[in-house]
Image (cartoon, rainbow, N blue to C red; front, side, top):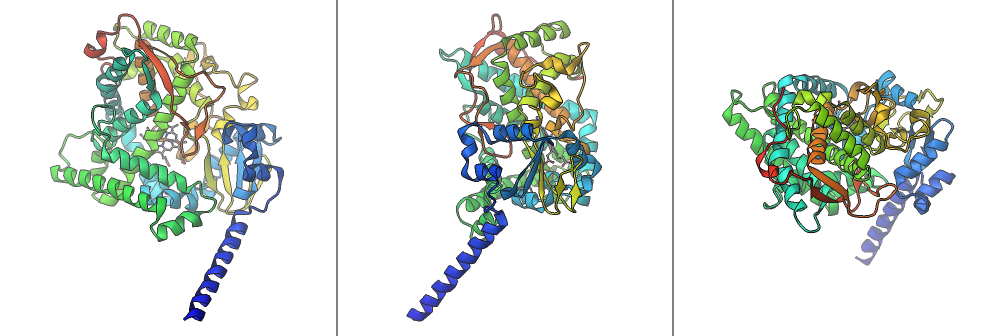
Length: 505
Ligand code: HEM
């Protein structure tokens, strides 16, 4: 018996040693180049607040604007010609790849965000068709307008009357965006911004599922989370439970909607997709993908923009002046069409996301050996990452004032003009460009306009050079965004009575 136990122990130790050796070589932690050493020992953090700031520094100083983190099998670039090559010219050779799909696969299933090839092509075609419809754009605008008028403004207004008037805007925008994306995606209102109600169970489960899925990407090798999943322990157990809760909810919504039938007058994305298929798994996957794609990115963009605006009163004044000149109805902000006429506001939004992109970097996996336009050789199976955060801070793209928040750089004779998406890949570019870009711009511009017209805001904590970010798939401020708010003269009584975003085109 004792001999048997001993042999089991020996086999177990041998297995662990082999496993560790495998991980050691798989992750190449033995690379001793200067960059890998700084990465592995985290010595970069002595000089930089955030990993993305260190990468920006390295990319700026590389003659090709491309670097290699060997220990991660990752080539990182901020060279716009490389970005165009990956996203357009050689798109088929740079898919998302199996590694990415595996990380989000349990949560997103086979939804558009998580697949390549024919499945992606089909979903993209359908989604583009639906989102391009004027009725869909008007629906998105109505959803945003309703949430601003009936929840966001009253909530901030009530805080502004308190003595301190300090509110964590990152939390407010997270709740706001979740409400908006749920109403838009399934026609369901989780009422997250209604602070008098307990947080919706769907929101809690969704939050946990997206956080824990993102955590998978941070393990040194996928084997770690795959083994935890196999034994259903720790974070993987919690992930499994939260996904189960999200699925239960989605299945119930789909079941209810099927009962009502296709003749219902629902405008949301789910109802539109139900007209083309009845497959509940496919329907669940696509709406969950949209929810994830939109919720955190919108929160992040609004948080970043308000952090910048709270430190730039002259830019806030210019937004107000443009609105006063463009919006004819006193107090009512605008119509869907009028939003397009606010060129300065559009420039503010683009400029803010240049400096603080919600998705700071994006990785693809190389299918076959390739050479990028800057001469970098990429081996089959390597990860290639374009770094939007660093690209927004490149003198070679934006000039010597690249670190200045200057909306005017997007205006020619007062009219907004776009840079190529390969120099500004905030919404990505090429064949997989973001499908929610227009909806995002409507939401972000509507929120900025309503809030700056009605409130004065300042940072409740001393300004920092750059915020500190928490690790994750989208940029989040560690510690939130605490702003002090005051209602501007003459607005207090209107807060409860008058809608601020009016009509659609
Ligand atoms: C400021 C807000 C947003 C930003 C910065 C943003 C950015 C991006 C980026 C960088 C991608 C490429 C991701 C990848 O392929 O790995 C993407 C894809 C996508 N986005 Fe957005 N997004 C935003 C909001 C939204 C919203 C509100 C929606 C939904 C209405 C949405 C729907 C999608 C979808 C469906 C894709 C996948 C497209 C495809 O793979 O063909 N996004 N977005």
